[in-house]
Image 1 (cartoon, chains in turn yellow, red):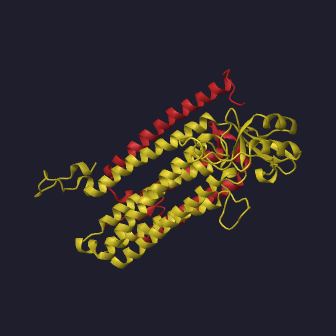
Image 2: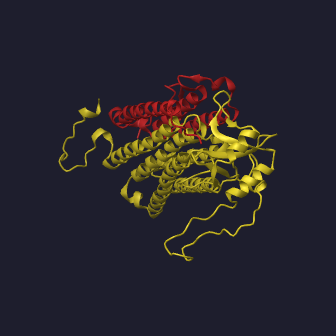
Image 3: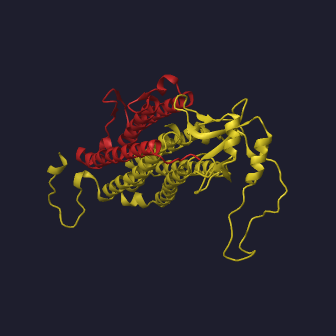
Length: 326
Length: 124
């Protein structure tokens, strides 16, 4: 406990400004902010764990949800994209440490260059996350939901691959169109209708004997989702209530409703941190260019935003593990 | 400012702080690569449950904590701070987070069993 024996001499101890624990006021407060933010994130992640343990035998499998990679359309590439995102964020953390290190040596140009690289890395990460969200919200295959809130997906009987609604749904003549506020009573409207009505999906399913239903439930022995046989599938499709395409906060085609809610909430909150980190980094970057810290005589401000930036990286390491790996 | 330049309990010592940063980056990249490789291959040996969870998941969590340690200790240079400052940051997290996890996950497991054994059907 060497810090507690620090004795400040010849200095006013009442006006602040002395350094307890050998850390400046600003740095210490950044650290304590990070501690409280870390507890917030752990609250979210533990809540996610709660919902997952509660639905341990029916939670969506990450590999079946996140399998997109840019320019590789239709290729099943689970994990690769998030791994790339993780690497981008770790790398931008490295350029940040290099900026801090250059700041210690008062090398203004180097600090500016490394800050710029950090900002670019952060921007690429936020962009990647937006792309990930786009795929998640859009969905690719579509599913139906039963009255009990269970998601039913469609697979082929021979290969077991997912089948999109558009490839089997039949077309029925219908006059049904979206009810908007400017038709009828102004305060009554409805969200946009799915591409195919429930009747079209059901009829298309019954007409195509090669289709089976994949349920939410996980087979404990194999770790895969349980696929019903044809007779059980035909009975199950009659229980469907909604056609679900993509994801929103109410229902999603991947499985349990809470899954999409937590995905949006946790990655969104993290993405917001990255975004604000990029903004703060930009401010510091311009201050470096203007020579503010050169005149001040130290680059501690770079170190403080650096701490925040590394924290964002640290949180992503956990989000990556709990959303994509475990 | 003096930096502590050894990692792995003094097993690897770097000449300068910049070299240490690159060294830690290499280490973190290797750990991430191992995680991704295991996540893609999913070796069947590791899928057996250990202490209520798949062995593979335990490996992922431990590797994550290892990464978190090196990010905090070397990138956020907690290694260079005073011991009491480091403790005042890390100890609240080390105490509160496992506590919260323990309570909520045990509760969730209980609710899972209630829903499993109860007389209410959830799947219709």
